[in-house]
Structures are given as structure tokens and as C-alpha cells.
Length: 262
Image (tube, rainbow, N blue to C red):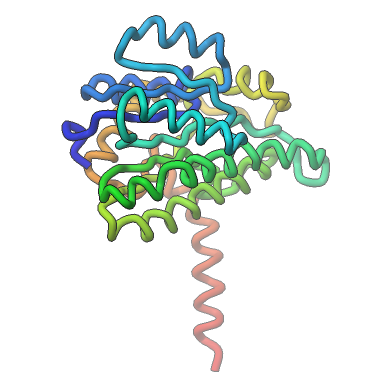
């Protein structure tokens, strides 16, 4: 999608972290942005700092009626949404499946997967009818390979986002609407703090988080480029393929075994 022809972006989880990096990338390209976030206090500060280039919408992405209100108010103020970025999410709980409270599992899926689907439900049909737009869904490297203990529920949600995005891309392409799945690696943000604010839990993973020089601004620029070039997938860090190889090799081996049977 040529962003020079876009006017309005709607970004969830946009008041901090990767979402704010994406917001600022859209603003740099001349779009007005509706920043949707559950944290009203932080949202107010961000909107005040950026003036009339953005507007705020307090939104819990689990709330489908809230989505409809936020959409109606955003489009009344700034016109149809050209770019939807479903970015809001929470961190892994650090628990293995055998030790996990079902409520924690439900919360992670409700915010990280159903919350993104709710954004699609709210906007995709209108974009299809107009024959214009782009949707970005934030998954994770954990949505490509489930390789770290204690990230299991998070990976379930993020694999779901990846599948949703791949299916949606096939459905929307004939109608001129692009879909990108964003699969970031570790970027230093306030995700843990935001997770606690919505009642989530944070525990130490069995594997240390890697150092990263990738910033939210970097990710915002990657997303803007992906929209412009209609890229299906964005990874933010090097060597992601290496982490996927064992899983893909096992799938290939299973397929080869079945193909070899009479």
C-alpha cells in the first residue's frame, strides 16, 4: 500500500513500546493516527505530547462493543481507517503448561489472540468493501517456533495470530487489502509492566532474555516498509530461521516418511 495515499491509521497498544514506535512511523509518513490503549493515563500523556497528529481511544481489545464504539468515533473524527495495526498484547507468564492456572492461559489467549481477531472483525469488511487498506497483526518469534520453556501459552496465542494473518492475507488479497504478520524478537519495552496492569503475571523464564539493539523506532520503520511493499511477514532480528529449523525439519521428516510408504 502506498502510504502517501493513506490518511488514517488505528494502532492498538499504541501508547508505549512497539505500538508507539509504529504510531510515530505512521506520523512521520503524514498519517493521522488513532492510538488505542487500555492505559488511559499513559495514553493521555502520549496524545498531549504529539498534538493534533494523533487522537486517543481508551480500549480493552477484549471488549467487542468497545471496538465498535472506538471505530465509530475514530472514523467520525478522521475518516475511514486505511491502516489497522492490531498490536496490543501481554507478556508470557513464564509457567510450564503443567503448572499453569487456567485463568492465566485464558487471559493470554483473550488479549493476545482474540483481541487481535476482534480488530479484524471490526475493520476488515469495510476495508474489503472499499478495496483499500492494510492490516498488521503483531505475532512474535514465538508465533513461528515454540522453543522456550515457560512461553507455551504465549506461543499458542501467537501461533494463532500467525495463522489468522496468513489466512486473512489470502482472503483479502483479491480485494486490494494487504495483511502483514509482525513477528518481533525481544525488544526492550514496558511490556512486563503493562502485563501486570491488566492482571497478568510475570515470572522468570528458564532462558535468559537476549540482549538486543533493536528499538521500537526500528520496528516502526520495518512495519512501515512492510506495508509499502505488501510484505507477508516481518521478522525484526537475525537468525530466526535457525531457531525454526528443528521444527521444520521434524515436519519435513514426517512428510517424507508418509510419502515413502506404499
